[in-house]
Length: 241
Image 1 (cartoon, one colour):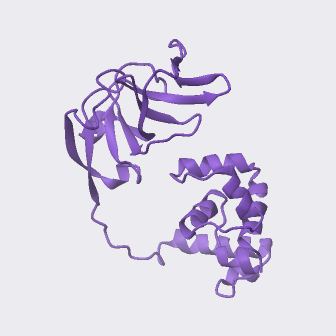
Image 2 (spheres, helix red, strand yellow):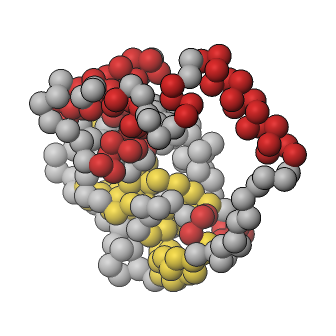
């Protein structure tokens, strides 16, 4: 029987990820995990929650958790085969799929919709108070088109974040008050709202544009910087409205 920490460490190394890279992948999945926490899991000082562990399994391609823990999954006939045997079994399964005679009959799923607010004040300029005071539109959208953790959307103005974000697009935002260095978020700096990448290092605190023709914005000790949330996706207006 293998410990959870051993499974994480072994499969992380198989994928060629450093601990920092795995933490970054988890953050992209909406899980704010520190390097220290991951280190404690891998040394079996603590264990991750079930949702976090399942997300790690997805990232590291751990497809049979029972087999990863016990070496053999007695409920899975493939588990007792070697790699050659598994390959032959999968080839036969593919032949069954290709025949079209053995496919499951799947019921049609009615698309699930979500309601979400889109704030009208563009995030490259404005009052910076759009979350509280700005006009907004509540739309109904197919949930498949929306990141699971999205809290609200904002309209993008200008080309300072090209090529990743373009003028007129909607940025989907997960509302939170802190960001990690290098993450893209929605900020209010002295009353002006921006979509920028956060740079917080030994050189100081800056809001960075992805478009290199725009200089970094320096945030000094006398400035007021508020974080509205982390940008976790985008959409073209004509695709959702």
